[in-house]
Length: 152
Image (cartoon, rainbow, N blue to C red; front, side, top):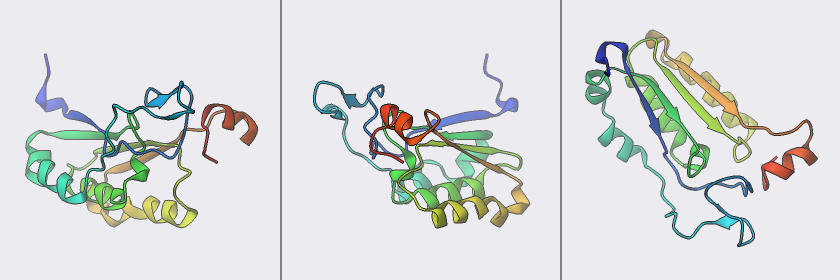
């Protein structure tokens, strides 16, 4: 049985867009030149959507301790509002909460990642953590290209 005292973990897809054409991905049509499958609509959650559906009160009342922005149908980093979305969660989660992001990372530049990495320090009082995992396959770009096409 679920125990609210332990805290809730949310897994949220904030985008169905992706810059990659990974042959092993469920969103990729292997029969059609690695394009996106037709049955997947292209959607980005806006910062307004996130604020509406994940308000501070809702996050606190549900005792959300962890949020994972997971690339099931797209990569969260393609979302134009992703910086503001992560900022919203860091600002409104309980202390000692975690945000996890999984990404191929190739659609953002070094300045973006530097700025994003500093975001938890802006909310020091909450001491929440931001963890970003870059999905890299292989030991060099040639090997990586086999599994994560259209990325570097």
